[in-house]
Every structure is written in C-alpha cells, then in structure tokens.
Image (cartoon, rainbow, N blue to C red; front, side, top):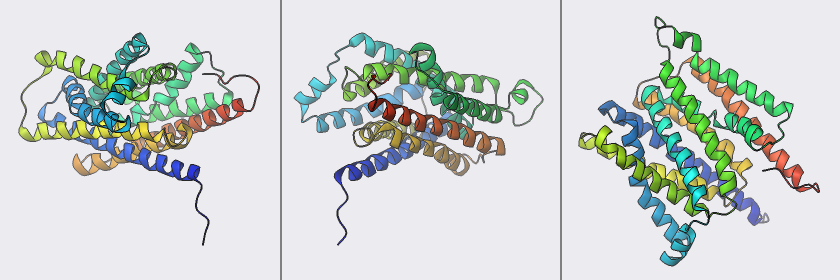
Length: 318
C-alpha cells in the first residue's frame, strides 16, 4: 500500500482546488454581468447588486468559520478602521472601473486587461514601498506591457476609421482599473498585519453595497426579471469566488495558488464566445499570453525572493 500523502501536501491540493473554483466563480460572475449590460445595466448598478447579493454569502461563511455569531463579531471588529477606509476607497473605485470596462469592452479583452494588475503592483511596490526590483522582474513588466500594446492596439484605437478597434475609453478605464487593483494589493499587504481576513472581505462588501446604493437614484432603472436573475447570480458567484479565493490562502502559499487566477482569462474567452458570440481575436490571445507570462513570472520571482529572505538574517521586505 502506498504511503499516505503528508497533510501539508493535502492542504496545498485543497488550496489549488479552491483557487480553481474561485477562478470559475469569478468567470461566471463576469459573464453574467456582461450579459446584463445587454439590458442596459450600468456599472454602478453592477457594483451594488454584486455586493448586495454577495454579502449574505460572505456573512454565512464568516459565521460558519468563526464558530458562531459571537466569533463572527470578534473577527469582523476592525482594529485599524482608517486602514479599512483607505482600502475600501481604493477598492470601490477599482470595482467601479472594472465593471465600467466590462460594459465597454469585449469580455475577453476586459478580463485580460484586469490581469495587468500584478505588473502595476510591481511598479507601485518599487515606488511606494521602496522594494528592490531586479532586472528579471522589470523584464517581466516589459513583457506584460508589450502584451497590453498587442491587446489594445493603440494606433487602431486612436483611429476612428479602424474597424474592430477597441474603444479608447474602454482601454483607459480597463488600465485604470488594473492600476487601482494594484493599489488594493499594496494596501492589503499592510492591512493583513492587523486585520482578520473576514473583516477585510466583509467591510469591502458593505462599502460597495452602501456606495452602490447611493448611486441608484441616478443610475438605477427597472430591468426585465431575467436581468435581475442575472444580477442575483452574479452577486452569489462573486461572493463564492471571494470566499474560495480567501480560503485558498489558508491552505497554500499565494505563490502556489495565484497562477491559477489566470484561468479567468480562459473562462472569459469561452463565455464570450459561447454566450456573447464574440470570438477572441489573434491579438487578444497573443497579448493575453504575454500578459499572463509576465504576471506568472512576477509571481514566481516573488516566491523566490520571499523564500530567500527567510533564510537570511535580514527581515523580508514587505
């Protein structure tokens, strides 16, 4: 009989499985939200409904994992409220831009541009956190930006006469969303030192619900019942995706599970082709490959850098 796998190995496999489920959930969420735009659903509405219908999923998860209501209340109590405020300001701005890009761009292109966030995170960590970034990580950043140029085709976007060019506004909003997402990544590094992960997720959903609700008098409108069903499904899928993603980090290192996030690009291509009848272009697939390669290499170098820091007398940079 073969020996049993060590528990650590089992935990890593569970973490990978959860991250794959997260990628699938977020792909479903994006596809449902993109379908809802066909009935005129705006980005502010997406922000509200995604958070409002995802919040019960998050609350149920917190209660179950924290040993009941009392444990959940303790976990959700913020130790650094102003840090949560900063995270929510950047995060809500980011999600607004993500959903606006989703309404302006094909599903595969919007998703691909969102994965430039690790590239921007490297740049921000160098500028704001004074992290040392070697030539290999800068090379990965350069490769990623080449991928961005291939996806966006800026010369075509600037030409009103070019057919099948991506709208310039969509490109700008998509890249701004990635930049803001990178800012969220930087703030989460600091927030994770003092705050429970349940509190980070919960208060972000609360902030999105409140801000989204405040925009409804201006941007909200009535939709067909099937459209509201899409929004409910998107909210539930987004909540599940957030929980799967968070749980994966409790079982496996981020460097192991993060590469599986790029399955969302595959999901976007499949759903865009199947549900929206928008086949991916050669430039989208080529650019996505380069952006993914740059992001995956950056994640691997981050893993190597942190592993080396653990065996040296100096503390690891954050």
